[in-house]
Length: 431
Ligand code: 4AD
Ligand code: MG
Picture 1 (tube, rainbow, N blue to C red):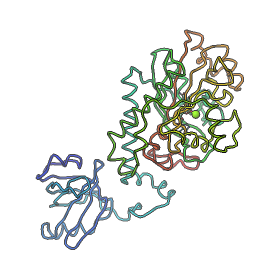
Picture 2 (tube, protein in one colour; picture 1 turned 180 degrees about the horizontal axis):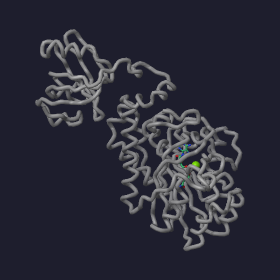
Picture 3 (cartoon, rainbow, N blue to C red; picture 1 turned 90 degrees about the vertical axis):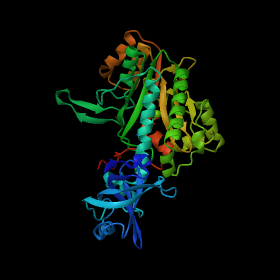
Picture 4 (tube, protein in one colour; picture 1 turned 180 degrees about the vertical axis):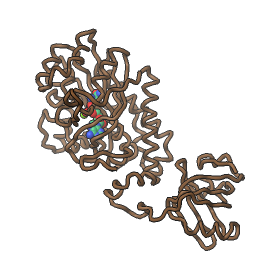
């Protein structure tokens, strides 16, 4: 008997095949047992008729529990009404492991229970669909940059530098050297890479000891960070919008099955096409005032503010020129008006908030020295970074896209915790 996967059924109509998998769901109707098998590639209903199979097999079909691992043999039938379009007219059934009392049943469970059982929850149809979308987003990210002549250059995870402020650092002991931090961003290393290779991207896990318990924050998340030599803020925005359009349109085209399982209304995602609106921070503040928000000029936007701003547009909006005071030390200021940083945040529609943060970088040595001092950062830890301004400094820009925020938005999730296999949250570091 030929061993195949559920995704290959279409090539075996009329033939007898063997499938290995787990029992997803079971129901019966008199003399018929319907077993839904899942094998990671899909789902298929296997039909056992009493009389067509031995009493022993019919009895096994009757008593095995959800998530038992099984081997099923039968003839492949085209069945338009069946999920996936095929059905198995089953003739044999073997148990590898007989499971009972699988904790995650088709009924409703509370979120903490599901998170405690994340290792098992991942087997559900919805979680499998999210993981597939996540994988496709990762591939789209790599394809996009690889296709544009970028080189992937990984940044270290243990670093001596704070990149995004000192309040969210995870510190760890580091042998005789004292301590190291888990990286908040690969950017500083990407800048070194851009000076060596022109266009690079880093893509890996990043860490923030975020005290905020929101649906948009993880303490460990994945970020992709392109960095480009001889690029200014406008070039950075051009790259960001082309990149986002590519990711969203690719996933829409290639993961429509998964988005259907997630019941995602994709009409708003269809709109994610260039050009995206670009508005100055001052215009964003005007929008908030018009909507009755008591907003203090010079502050950063909160989640609620971002939602109001993004609701004015039918696609992602790029807000640029933030007050330099609320942004990172490495951002270049606008020479026309030093109050503003040459920064951009891309806000996703439908209340998903900031998914990209980026900027043109300060390329002047003396100015950067001043900023490091103003931010009370230890200059010694940044000497290597300052060297990039001492030797062949050029204008350069880049940004960071949060993978989980992107997956969450595309899948239409309530909370970031479902967008990563094993979420790390302020109150949770298991399983
Ligand atoms: O805006 P951020 O802090 O920018 C940087 O880290 C820059 N160094 C990037 C660069 O220019 N190379 O973070 C970038 C993105 C955010 O827009 C958001 O999508 C995501 O990273 N992000 C988080 N995602 C999940 N949980 C958190 N706690 C996040 N913090 C940031
Ligand atoms: Mg940001």
